[in-house]
Amino acid sequence: MQADYHIHTYLCGHAKGMPDEYVATARELGLEEICFTDHAPDPDGYDPANRMSMEQFEEYRGMVESARESSNITVLYGIEADYYEDCEKFLGPWLKENDFDLVIGSVHYLAEWGFDNPAERKVWDAVDVDNTWKDYFELMGRLADSGLYDIIGHLDLPKKFKYRPDDNTLKKIAAPALDSIAAAGMSIELNTSGLRRPVEEIYPSLILLRIARERDIPITFGSDSHAPEHVGFAFEEALELARAAGYTQCARYRARKKELIALPGSD
Ligand code: ZN
Ligand code: FE
Ligand code: FE
Ligand code: ZN
Image (cartoon, rainbow, N blue to C red; front, side, top):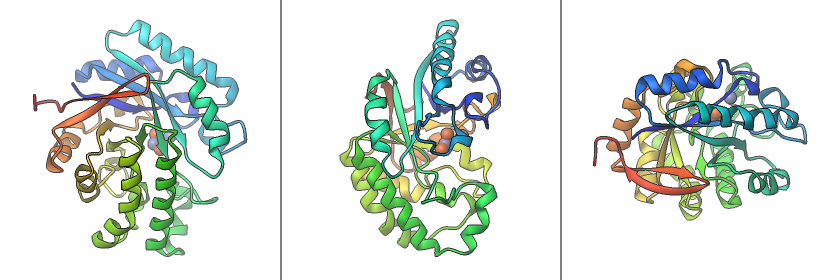
């Protein structure tokens, strides 16, 4: 069984298609399970251009519920929530009071800089690349230590535009965050959207995935769909990557509890 655990909806303002169309693609591909994980709303005005409003949240919930009812595959209810300074104040209680199946934790900003936003790509030419990655992985470590989330979203997102440290530097920079992720009992996702970006690689790279494997960090699969045709995108390639890193199992989630199951084709 392969599940797609990273799917957006039009409510975030930068995705298209109706939930039923995402479900239809999943069914065509033979996926038995998908999880909607749209960008979480934020009452304090964090990045409002890329997320539903608090008022739209009920609509999101209802939309996922009706997709679940009308579908003959398993449709889970999730959310992608950013980690940023002081996010615990809102996210701490809010994530608990909602009945999500899983919560993806992501970092899309370093201070005010949306480092993965094509419109802000030029900033990369002006910063120290290694130090930028250090800052990013420090936030990743804090994200894990917060205990708020289940799955790390696109672990090495800063590689999107191909600005990256050499392998040995990267290993050193990422190790403490991976320790925190392991200690928190979190999973990381193999996010195939990187293949649709300038870097043309799955997040994370094999080198980081091997370090995760050494620490027994479970994996999930996600297309980061922002259109129905993205569902299950390049999942064969993701499976190959998982196997290359030594994985034989992946995680599945229900009501924020994980369970390890065999990778498709390895049971
Ligand atoms: Zn998005
Ligand atoms: Fe994201
Ligand atoms: Fe996403
Ligand atoms: Zn994402």
